[in-house]
Image 1: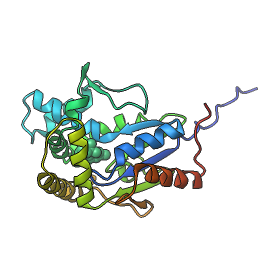
Image 2: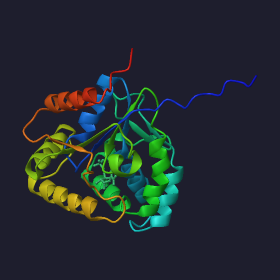
Image 3: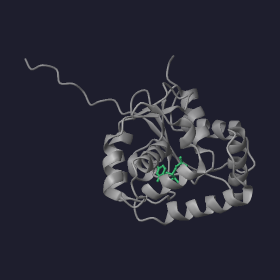
Length: 237
Ligand code: C5P
């Protein structure tokens, strides 16, 4: 009698939330993950860590090989669950510095380097664990999890995104003028959508959600409804 062969591994469902900077992806993804009791991947934080640690190591922004090497070996640990957004890199808590506009720009520069993206691909896929994953970024639905059960393209007008960023930075005691933030957001949009390596795109199968003029709660509720319509349920607790 032959031993029973194990069946196929259960598919781990993924909700991919992509969109431009400041559309509310991080907050929405974190809350959706918390409500579902699923894991959360803030993929932008990985690019931010690589940009920041690269600068601390004295790498030139265009040093693709150097950044790719770092991307493959930095020990990156996220806070225990989806309710926190603490990020440690090689044992140092970088959470606060990671969120600055300056580091956003460093991240956007290294994110255009194909070898850095390649080095982070497997690391991002490793977050896909039961009971499910909510992943936010620019290429979650297009490149990292093309088989995601639900793909959302979350957007908002530039004016609203700049306004939100301004408030966020102010709440954290960080500076920035509204005009500078609008310009930065437009520049980052152009760079993210215009690069050759995994540009920000809305895939044909991504559902458009516009957060302009809406509360976070309303957007979270909409994403949860879309998830429920795909048969995605909260994990049993
Ligand atoms: O989402 P966040 O603002 O933290 O991302 C920082 C930068 O990292 C983005 O401007 C983008 O250039 C890059 N990024 C990316 N692909 C992702 C997530 C972020 O290219 N999946």
